[in-house]
Length: 338
Length: 255
Ligand SMILES: Nc1ncnc2c1ncn2[C@@H]1O[C@H](COP(=O)(O)OP(=O)(O)OP(=O)(O)O)[C@@H](O)[C@H]1O
Ligand SMILES: [Mg+2]
Image (cartoon, rainbow over all chains, first blue to last red; front, side, top):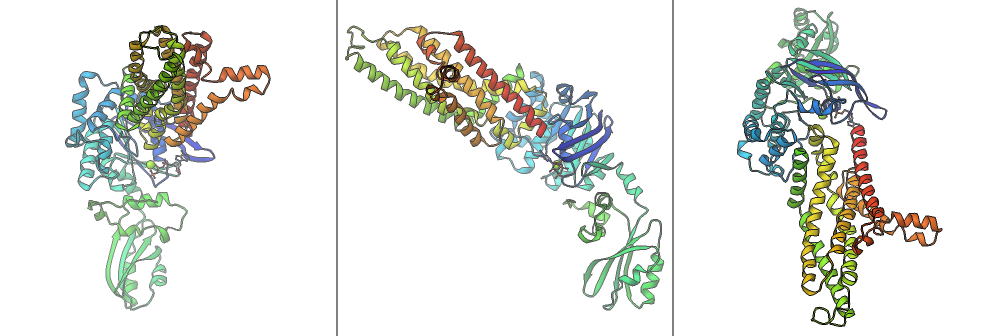
């Protein structure tokens, strides 16, 4: 449904998108994940015909976005990063305008506008001026605008940005619902969003694809490298050199420190389970062992690992262990601004 | 076609919800009214008070009243019309709504036409209000219809030229104030371009005189439709719209 081949976008000497290729099948939801400035918005703008690519091609429903822009645009609904609302129009007037420029037949306009407003939960804002809407409602009107003309492909740039927790859940449900007869590409830096809604993830960093896979596979792929969380009472002795001496331990870093008790992040070499050795070392040194548990890499960790290759990871990056999988249930999510 | 209409309606609406339409309509009508009274007084003096009193009409209403009035109107427009177009693209670029238009199944031509015809619609309304003053002249004297109609045609053509240049400039910036000031500066330049012509050689002078935007207007208010002037204004409008299209394309590439 959407084919992107060797897409490159340069601004002067700066390359914002670098040789990007991927495909999205009909009915699929593709998550576009990457830190700030990765090139997500730029890619989406090329797909929607807002700006041309420097090299490469993109097709929507078989139509080249550059050669046959009108045909491609007819099949696309787009929610830009900033919802493009006219402040002086009411929500209904705005959606009516959008219906007209998208060639929705006059007889269907009212019903399609109504359907879009119901799906995005904005029926109570029908006569409110767009300029007077709150951030979340602007986002929802933007979403209504994108799906109003029933496009085959939906391109959503951070669809849940600015929504309250309840609306985030509603919007994700809506996106999942829409997926059946629409093909969806959404961008986000919110990782749980991807694992909850998308069948496939494209992780990009500095304009390049660093991984394309399903959220599950991505997690599995890096399952090999695990880490331990260790909480011990050492009576003031620095245990790091001793712990690092254990074979199979790659790195030890301080995770937290409170009331004389130190928590450590112990990274292990792939496929080595040295929990017993670690426990033995702690005990033989006469320290108090308070907690020892294995940690699985979350999607968040994978994301950080893939997008922060060369940097010395453990200084400036939030501790991967700080966000346990349980953190996913939290209604307000952390954003990664790698 | 339906799409262009939707865009035109959106533009006209935009004028009326912002103060711009009212400011333009009020000031244009006031200024026009002021010049109207001034030239009416002048004519009354010239006619020795006979005008409209049933005495013999010694002054030609068209020559002494309508022609200078149209001439002054052209100058008012030079000041006011940049306000009509300064928002059109600049504001959409600033607020990001241009992204909606450029990703909808609309051609650049349709977008440009929507903006051009929208501005032209409001401008036509401005001119229509002056029709009241002109109609009153028929109460007092017997002006000829011909020069009045051609005068209005001239005003429409000249105003459209102003609008097309204003659109081109508005499409080059995100800042509507910059767009307004730059449009005014460019129009002013086209107005005074023949003033320096006097000192230079005769060919240069005639070229500069040909370029002058007001120079071409006078014949219209005299009741003459000269293809030379018609060509000038139509080319000017064409050039303005062409530059707008070019600028939209450039903006697209530079993202
Ligand atoms: N018009 C432009 N001129 C020059 N550089 C640009 C332009 N637009 C974007 N860029 C650069 O291209 C890069 C990619 O930007 P883009 O907006 O696509 O990132 P993003 O992945 O959407 O980031 P975010 O998560 O912050 O939205 C950035 O470094 C940005 O500064
Ligand atoms: Mg972005």
